[in-house]
Length: 267
Ligand SMILES: Nc1ncnc2c1ncn2[C@@H]1O[C@H](COP(=O)(O)OP(=O)(O)OP(=O)(O)O)[C@@H](O)[C@H]1O
Image (cartoon, rainbow, N blue to C red; front, side, top):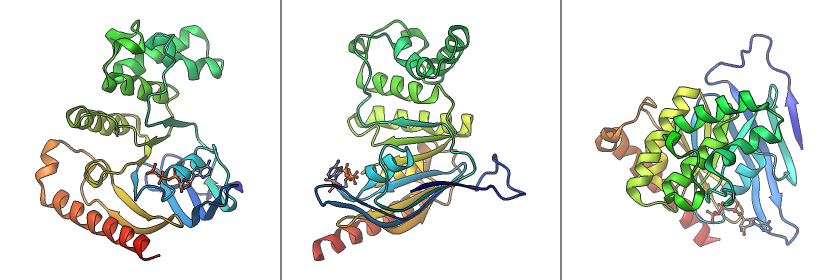
């Protein structure tokens, strides 16, 4: 069930830290009987960068798809605190239309919403500039590297300026150098646009580098088992990787993940 709750009388939509959406005791059983999630409670707060980590099959993608409205809970509630905002979704694969130019790929969400051509051109130019691809507007996906295709996919997700961006292992298929570059771009973009991000990854290191908060999940059934705050401002540079906060948080997140997997082995 999905509901929209009234905003508190003093609430302000731009308040950093305000709850945007809450998953309350959300469970999901697929028609084949697979229990993907069991009583998951999760708040997403404005301005945060939240990562979901956990072993394969613990329901990370299912939780993300529920936030996007792509799948409904079997029981429990998804409660939006205020109007459900525009949401951008970035998948593991860039999912670009191979027959369309970069410009036309990024145009798609605007066309679907009937945004006029003049306005659309400005927004597409902006989005491509944000991801450093202005010079490639006329290129086709086959002419781009994996990292560039992912940048197009991010531009397409950001072209509607969504307050909430959901990303499902977007950099998993990329080499480490490209991944690090895109991590830095993403932090910069989220800060510039004031975007709240929910990010699914298998990588403890990536989650700590990017996030303000990490939720660790366990499988069979999928549930949240630990929450770890990253006690550092979200102005990350490569230097962050050699700080004690980074190292210590990676250690805590790795231990929590290991415990989540041990739980699973014992079921
Ligand atoms: N449409 C579906 N029908 C049946 N079972 C599904 C469906 N989608 C997902 N599942 C199952 O639900 C469970 C959770 O899947 P989900 O993709 O959410 O996990 P995940 O944590 O994102 O996994 P991974 O890290 O491998 O991507 C898995 O056991 C999966 O096989």
